[in-house]
Amino acid sequence: MRIEEDPAAPELRGPLVPVLVTGPSMVPTLRHGDAVLVRTGGRAVRAGDVVVAVFRSRPDLLVVKRAVRRQDGGWWVRGDNDLVTDDSRAYGVADVRGRVVARYWPRPGLLRNRPGR
Image (cartoon, rainbow, N blue to C red; front, top):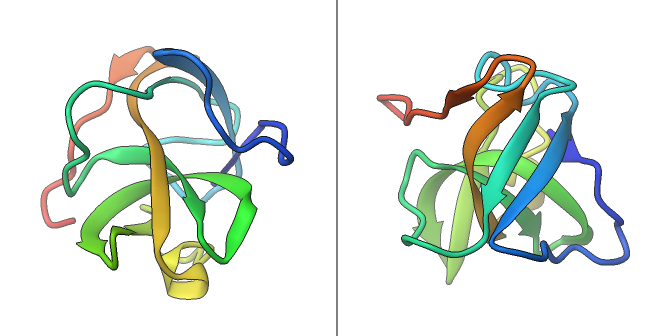
């Protein structure tokens, strides 16, 4: 799931950054059009967290995915929708830029880790 950001500048600026989600790769957790808050600092990323990341093979592309495991100094990330494979299966290891901590539009709520991921 891509996020709408300037592709020439894939850094998130500020401690809490609003992000608009596009695409189906994180369904059912996040849907196209959801607006989320991303924390760029705070606690370390854990397996199961929903994150904003940049694939090392696609440094111009910010994505929203679920952190699966640490690998090669970065993270193996996957979408929650197994039918969409635009994640580490296609692009390899990603570097996390921040953690998604809340959805504020259209269905407010904190994101929870999914068991089994």
